[in-house]
Length: 116
Image (cartoon, rainbow, N blue to C red):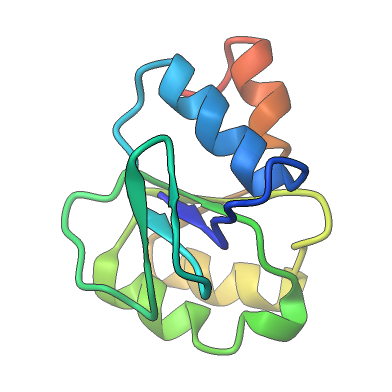
């Protein structure tokens, strides 16, 4: 799941979406703007999802207000906090909920074969 998805090709969320697809990962895109990326619609709000392995985060701390409750509800295995999204106060609560936290760049992880 790309949380903070964007239709702007200059945004890292867009680049990550394209690269995740190139690596044949199944994706759900969640963002606050209407649109799609490579034929995948961007869902709004906090859609009910099941079997989410990884949430890769592209929203800054100022926009993470409901993230903890949402993550507790959908229970991803891990959340990758990409550069600019770091939020150490949130890490502890996510880890208490059994969600792995990783400060990393999804693009780098994919390019170096470390994403999985």
